[in-house]
Length: 187
Image (cartoon, rainbow, N blue to C red):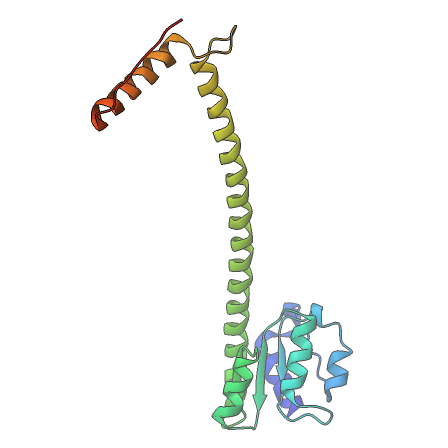
């Protein structure tokens, strides 16, 4: 089975395309590989030393790559559990499944690249938002400084005539609106 699968994938991608296939027989042999160098992992559910689900968890803990189950286990519960635990897809070894494998690999790789690009863009957006928040704080501080400079006399630091007239108008309108008395004393 492993040789047929390797041949089907090899024919589709071709050795000249820079692709190579590493076929192993056990979970431990798989984990001994430099997983971060692989584009995709195809796993069987039944392995001599562990289940494919256990192997998938260990692979995903070490590398960010799509995992596709290719197995004779034809139960929807197993497929659902594999997908819930991180598998990109699930293929049952029935009929002409070998012809579907390259298509599923291509689809899984496209989805994986889209997810990685979305993650990169999300991080870039968060970084830009953080920068914008800092710039907004700096702008508000500069605006407050300009307001203070516009409202005060630069020699005395007291409110200037324009600010005084503005405040007087505001307090007069407020007193009129609420029926308060207003007294102004100028020294």
